[in-house]
Image (tube, rainbow, N blue to C red; front, side):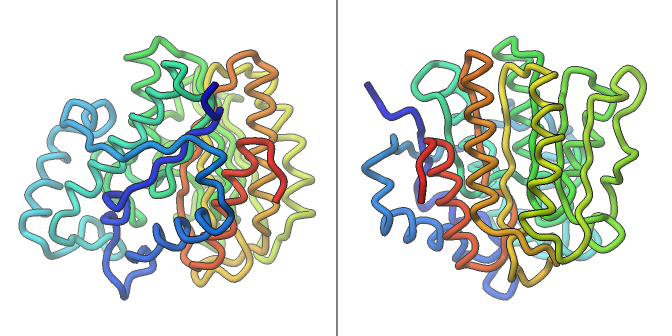
Length: 317
C-alpha cells in the first residue's frame, strides 16, 4: 500500500522566484528540500514531480486578458505586475504555470486515490486576483484548485484554511459570495500588515454571510494565542463538513520572519496540518492538499514546512 502522503519535489518549482535581492528568492525550495532529506522523510512519503499547467488550467480562475498580459510581460522581462512588490522577471509565466500545474497534479492525485494528502512547497499564491497579480503572487493556484474541484471533480463543499501571516485576500474576495467555500484564515491583524484586509467582521457577502471566518492576531502573538483561536476554527470547519480541505501554511507567521511580526513556532503549523488531516479522516474522505505559501526566513521555511509534512502523516518531529 503506497504512503498516504505525497510530496512534490523538483527543480522546476524553484524557478518561481523574483531574484536574490527579493524576499521571495530562489533558495526557498532548497531550504525545504535539504531539511526534508536530512529528516529522511523521502523514505516515508510518496514522491511526485512538478508539471506545468495548460492555459485551460490557468483560465479556470484567471481571466484571459490577464493571462495574456503575464505572457507578454514575462517575455519582456522587466517592470512590475503590480504597483511595487511583484516584479517581472524573464520566464515568470512558465514558472507560475508550473506552480499552478503542480497544485492541480496534487489535486488529481488525491481525487484519483493515489494518495490521501499532498504537499507542494512552492505554492499557495493566495494574493493574486482573477485579473491581477499582488503580493509576490502571479497566478492564484489556490483559486484554480477551488475552481477545478467544482468543475472537474464535482466537489462543491470546499474548505480553504490559511495560516500564513498575511490575509489570503485573493481567495477571500474572489469567493466572498460563494456559500459553498468555507474560508478560515488566521493572520496578522491587517492594521499592521499587508494587505490590510481580513478583519473579523468580514464573514462573507449575500448568501455566503457566515461561511467565512477571519481570525486576526496582534503583532507578537505566539502559539498560545493562535491555539486559543484554533478551537473556534476547527469547530467552524467541522460544522461545514467539507468534502476537500486546502491548507495554505505560510511560514512567515513563524517568529523571526523579516517582513512580518507574529511569533508562532513550526509546532503550530504541524498541529494544524495534523488536525485538518484528522478532521478529513473523520469526515470519511481524508482529502487535504497543503501548499507552502509565504515565508522569508530560510531556517523557518525548512523547519516549518517539514513539520507540516510530518503533521500530514500524523508524525511527531
